[in-house]
Image (cartoon, rainbow, N blue to C red):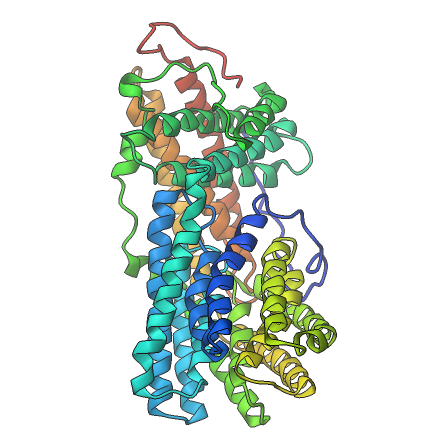
Length: 562
């Protein structure tokens, strides 16, 4: 155990960097699933409307269809709930937009309502951890609905179309459960094993070990959240418990990287990719076939929604103000579709200003390249309405397939798709569409980024202090149990998991706060101390757990090597 006093890391350089913003990453492991789901959800309603000669109603069916883009990483029981809430949230936003559109045509009022909706959607999506594509799709649809001519009598029918498409999207999202019912939890476990293997490969001291360790704990924490959302009893319990043991081995590797064989972890991860049997770790099951500490985690209730919304207030204010100002600026320039500027601003806002700046660059580059792609596609799409629909479907697939490589690359397909959708109701002059979209992109990005700079997030430093305190308390609890001669195994395991979660939250909170451009200095030394002492305590807890007498066999397992 080192007694050296850690020194605070360098203060973050708050500059407008372009390095790496446009760099392409490896595609998501399941990039094809949201891509195929979006096509499967959008195609039938659009083709039916085309057959009936009512393609002008496609905006309402797309409101429901695009819900199929969500929750692809969640186990199916959790996915069913999340998709249902997304569909309801989409319908709620569309309902507010349609009612507003039917009561007034004042563009300033419409932009104001759109900005308020965007702020609410951003806050709720972040607080609910809905995941990508987050609030952007909801804001895109509700903002477009605000500027669609509407009467009160038409609203029930339009909402019914959106609801019917939403039900179809829910079915599309749940359909893979018929083929691979355990796919999401197996992938989450494999990602945890691979992340732990990457850290183990550094032996805990090699180049990049700190970032690899943080990524490993984040992946393990995500795996636990996935597994604990599954039933603890019933037909799926055996699969869950087998995967839990693999996640435990990933935790052991993070605590004892020098004693770990990374290739064995990677072999287990590869075995989880298909539909074969789950690899066995050799660990004897605990009493009742339950891993220690899991019941304690299941008993812990998530923080109430209002408490999760509180820290998101600055981001929500940025979103509302930025969207409103972007829409007003577009109106002042005489642009006919100010909701494009509004949606551009809404798409920028990330966890901090540094990430928001990066997203602004990606959005501008992708949209402008997408405008050029539209110029090449438009002549073909204008030959027939069926070609218009097919082009949109192809672009829909391309957007979801490419966006995991980098946001700007997906935007290259999203932009021409959005431009073509505007022509479902009738032909639009391509030159006017391209000009308006380019101008709105620049206006939305510039004004939106300005609003993000103006609305400072001064709570970021306070949240770092709170996260350090929580990590210290979790470490002290685990340390007290470690000095006891015979602590209850379940208590020690629960304390260890709580400490791992607190350290993961501390690293995420510190990273988010470091990306803010203004604000008081962060307690860098306290963060480093908390992380170092916390990870030492975690390693000691893992060794204690690995050395405990097995309750079923009476033997001891001294070796912590996975």
